[in-house]
Image (cartoon, rainbow, N blue to C red; front, side):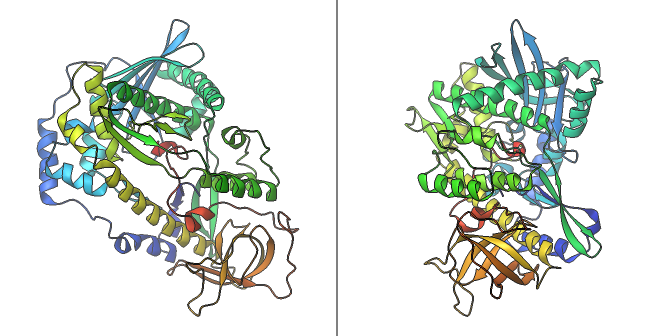
Amino acid sequence: MPYSHIGVMGSAAQQTLAAALAALSVEFKLPDGFSPDVVAEVEKVIAGHTLPDLDLTALPFITIDPPASQDLDQAMYLERRGSGYLVHYAIADVPSFVPAGGPLDSETRRRGQTIYTPGNRIPLHPVRLSEGAASLFANDPRSAFVWEIELAADGTQSSAHVRRAAVQSVAKLSYAEAQDMLDAGNAPAAFAGTLALLKEIGTKRIELERARGGASLNVPSQEVDFVDGRYVLQFRPALPIEDWNAQISLLTGMAAAQVMLEGKVGILRTMPAPDGDAVADYRMQTVALGKPWAEGVEYGAYLRTLDPSDPKQLALMHAASTLFRGAGYTPFNGTVPEEVTQAAVAAPYAHATAPLRRLVDRFVLAICAALCSGAEAPPWAVQALDELPDIMSASNQLASKVDRAAIDIVEAALLSHKVGTEFDAVVLAGPRQNGHATKAGAARSAIQIADPAVTGYCEGVLEPGTVVRVKLVTADIAKRTVQFVPAAKAPLLGPGATAAGDPLRAGGQRERLGSGAPDLDKLDPRRS
């Protein structure tokens, strides 16, 4: 799955699942708190922090986030400007809280990003900063980098610049609250216009994304509960406003990329187009799951036809992460690089909207603000450009490993009461040269079952793309192990066939089987 979005409900808190998830911090040596010198520096900086001279606190910004979020990176205020629009997008002013070369700067470079596990997080910055002084809470004046992006009537960008300013949000909304207010038409006057324009602008930006060949996935959140002695996975379909909100973040990332390209200094988030093998594999899955991807249709256009309320199509949304590979960071100084496009965005793009949770955004914001003011990019930011790709790559790899381990644990929990049960399964991959084998040396193949949508291994050499009958023999939460064997006298169905009684789902296999991690930016608005 592209990003697990998995939470653990309170009723499971004392269960084996919660204990196994908590153990991930130890296994992966995740940081535990912050050193005294970092804490002391943060307290000193907060005590001496002053707001920028430019005062935009009269603008009624709002934040829209998951309900439990406290690290609020982004706030928006939208207004009409002639026949078009003016987007005011405030981003938390993290650079002003992190002295270059100090203990916090060093620690954040060591961490790279906030690491999430179901029900927990290892923050990039101390919460006193990320969920306090720098977070864009409602009714509190805050320092921010404020983007002002002018859009034409059709939603295309006509200009963009960013500068530091004091802002004040008037409301902290959850996605559900914002959607309900918009649908009912009962939003307070202070931000009713922003919500209405968010829908209007977001819809137009989605059409522009489709036209340029970009791709978005609005994957439902998932939550694990413990009911009647067994673990169950509950889904919360994504709301339309989440997609519209993500489009504003993407717009800002594209604007930041353009500012840096024009200034010939900065760092881009780049990704190549899907390779032929990944496309062929995914096309086979779409046929097997009854929603064929027709030749000649752009993959972004196809993905937007998927209905997350249909279990098989939801699985295809998860499996689409196989198309988003090879993402990286491309720094430049003085010369524009040859490759500047992020294929999922289908345009040049930069990470610029989540500095509380991702290291590179801090440097992008500082560079863009300097360039927009006519000044040179700050030396501390330019000097870091060459090392940022390695820092972020290592951090992304760690986040991916933790995420995969969490998914393995959850999948084992979901199957823990089904040992001995038979399932129909899609064969995802046969044995590999590097060893899909048991400790005893028996070959094994990767498979996907339908309900619950879990990937695992089945003993034997199986043909990829076929449907087989398998029996679950192991579902060990502590060891993160799910193991199947062929069911006795089970018929082997042809490629793309679907066995009766168990509609197949093919989501999530590449996070286990492929090399590298999918690009998370387009798959989760929280990480864009």
